[in-house]
Image 1 (tube, rainbow, N blue to C red):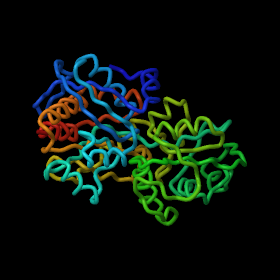
Image 2 (cartoon, helix red, strand yellow):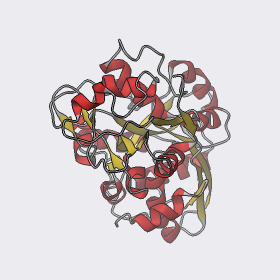
Image 3 (cartoon, rainbow, N blue to C red):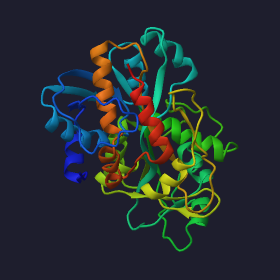
Image 4 (cartoon, one colour):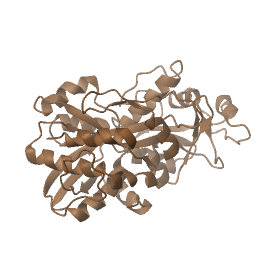
Length: 360
């Protein structure tokens, strides 16, 4: 099953995705190639817009297999998704960052005093997409990126950018930078990279809400992508799949070991080196954002599906478990790479399947 650009573009403009849940599977090591049928019921979820295009592919499989069961996934941003879950408005949240310490107690209360768990399901590169006439290749490093997004570098031909791009005819045009206006895990991961790699330049707080001065806000990864596509001399950060759907160009990133292109394969190298910092069935990850080996793309995110290990209504728990059993299958994960995402693989995928199997 392959993700097509047509399918992605169609769903990317919708605010709500309707999915159909697959059949239940209690086998933690399941690598099923298709969703089981015969499941009925309704499920609500919301959150990450970065994984919106991945959800679009999973929609088709579930609707075909289970016309009697639906999942409504609203791509309203990671911050809103986590709050929807804590407020018991949804059965799981999609978030590009794991639960924050200040969110854990609320999530546990939503789970009737049980643990809420972070389950990695979609990996991806955060690309710096740009729109500059005549510039087909652009290299940025952490310091120049921080300068652009904090308003300290305002022209494309600034000496700091020019030094990284010898031979490139950079215009003397004002840079139009776009950031997320909504509470976003993509923002959280992007600022974590800036803080880790250039703390002397990016001295602001990280987190899901953009706090740097200047620039223009746009809602969702698709909103930032559309803004960059329609604005000359612009730049914005977004999940890589949106670069593809908007036919944008993405800067190469030099973390100190050479310029690395924003690709799924290069991002996969960084994500593969991540370590689990969560305990039990919580799989929150530690990611090395300072990697500088010349082959690993350093600005990455992992989207977690956040739900109750125990504490959901029995019917809802069964539906969540069925859905996540499919999304962690070989077929569902294999469908991601064709659309600019990074599938979960290896030992981490085995742990993901064990976490899904523990939902009850």
